[in-house]
Length: 286
Image (tube, rainbow, N blue to C red; front, side, top):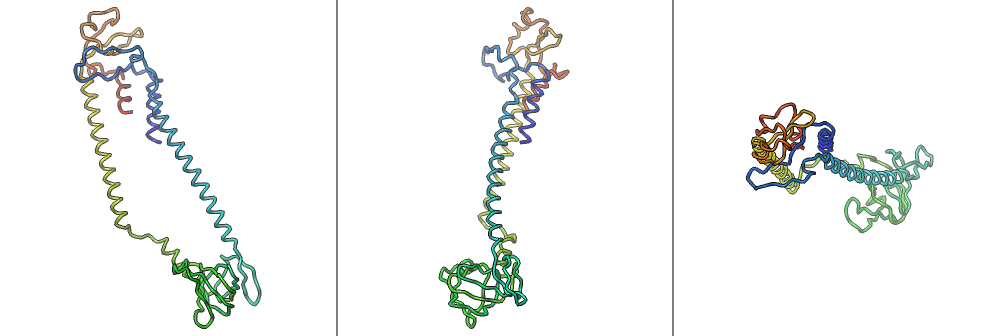
């Protein structure tokens, strides 16, 4: 976006600030007579169009991406709010309380029925033909039977698929098994060998692109400097200034005073004064 904005600014400077009429780039070798159309010697003021097109394309793509990401974020937040709005039945201080899942504390006694999700780790007090789906933790799809004598441990993040139970909460949040798993997912992990290789490839591509851009820039600069050193025809203007006559032969330039009044045959370097060739320089860098 910054480069496109700079391109537009330079293009507008060339359009609205008169810095002299620029000719098309002259070939560095002899190609014979060159015929120019009238439009070739006129300023069409279109240097800013390319920058504007790039700017609009970036804005359109960026806006669409931002809108899509914003909609996905809203949907995620909506689902998260629905999940946080879940309530469980608790026995707290000898009273039955219907509390949100995120307000469950250590020491609460939770009542679970079929289909309920276990909100925190704990130990069974009593149950009735209880079966729990622990696939989210162990990966096993077969429900696990629970009882207060042999398998009393209740793990958060699991779901009751059959029966009902009452258990004592012993760990919540990051101290629960589900919380520990989420904490491990949040920690930074070292890059895998594939990620390291992809990073190296991306870095090498960036270096190659920078090298190619540098070579192209140096080559274009050399071509521009050489073309500036070629002798060409400069003629007077009605306003009293002087401009370059595009692709005019020496004998025509110096011999036809009607079309080329007070013409001189010289290099652009010798006439690089008062910003006469500044528009060429700006257009070249754009």
